[in-house]
Length: 188
Image (cartoon, rainbow, N blue to C red):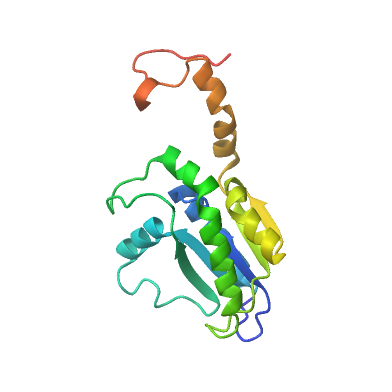
């Protein structure tokens, strides 16, 4: 089925957790949603948006299909080097406590500009990474937009996240991120 163009009625705003694997997984989902006829606004942090442009070159957004757009919001962190990986703990803290206001403002802006920019309708739903609930709840409540929270990363990564505190508590996580060498580890 070819994507719809002039008759697109639904507009999904998609917000991954701002880490590479989450972005890639959400991007795969948005391609499927777009192919089924939804307009897509893919939300990145300014840091990751800049990295996409650097990787894709100056014409990165030139070939986007009709009804698909990338936008960026601040991540609430101090500027860092372009090629540096952001501190995950700070990124989590920011995503859960600081990005909500920027995301809410973005939803308001998208709705105000509906149909005047690229022919996008008002926002119909928010598709958010399961870890971004704190960031999208305010916008959902303020504008009455339904939210779908998905874990687009593999189940094994989600389970690892759940068990990380227990592994750390049992001393099974290597200190300072340095792997244990020549040491047998048992989880049982």
